[in-house]
Length: 149
Image (tube, rainbow, N blue to C red):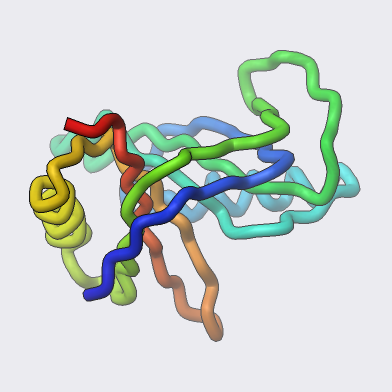
């Protein structure tokens, strides 16, 4: 597995939060994309999401979904959607998690080991950059570096 160290920047990002079963995370992600299209915009990049607050008894977790869009928008504060002109992390590690059937926790451990070897601390939870490649889903896991040790 190849790990890269790089920044990540997205422009004109619309976000939303949802709580759902971990095997149904794609439903609110699709709803975000559909809401964007219904409002005359289009996505200019991949869906990025973060997972936290996992409850094993219900198999549910909290998600934050982000999608860069075609232009800046004026959006009033509301409980459903948010907007930032630029979403950026200056430094982090990225690892491709190519097979969604593989345990993603193993990829997290590889990133943590890389951080330890480089004497840096990671900011968790990590970000998942969902890429649709020939109809198959691939996830790049982005682990922001919190600070040099």
